[in-house]
Length: 272
Image (tube, rainbow, N blue to C red; front, side, top):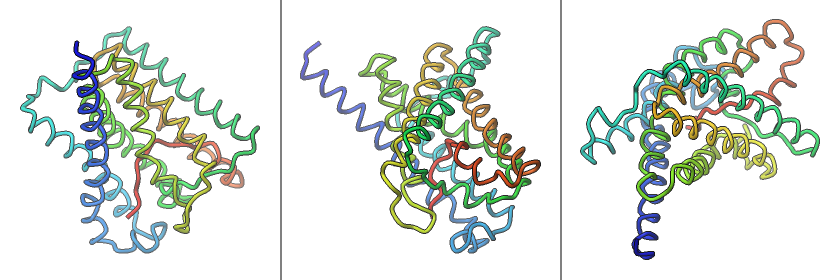
């Protein structure tokens, strides 16, 4: 293949991937507006907003990603067959469980390394909405399984990663997608809860966790060729963290602050 043509293919694929990821973030800012209009407290003091409003905003946030991915597939003329929604085999379910366990292990390994190196902790805007409400943590499990994991994996795996296959090797596409996936989460952690810029060093362990986690889920998608596998692994991974937080709030509330140091979720930006 002509090297010049190949470079052009790389550029087009990366540009499309970046635009799709950015489009998902922008769309989310609009799809959450109905929840904000219903309960303006979401924009002023999120922790004081009604649970129903917070849950609606969380769900609508992910709807934006689905809309962007669906519009792109429609524009490219792809039908339903483009969605890799085949049920995993028994072996593929085993791979999914393994991917979940490895992702959790990576999360803790990075957390321990961060503590050893004395890196600062970054705030997470999602925690601002949850606070110390254990019931809200349980309700977040619904968001994780029905909206968070399906929406993110659909856009980043079945749309972006699959689009990159046109120019990259499967592993190259996984790495590129994972870099983009980590980058789009910077708004979630890049600002302290008071609106000031977060310490850049605090982003290092989080971005590393997100990048490696996305590589694990992306490679799982390559191996299984079904979107159901990374959706399930992603959901189990996030659910583990929220379940851990719930147990802390219910039985060890005095350890809440310490728990925040290790609960690193993959929810996208919720800044209004």
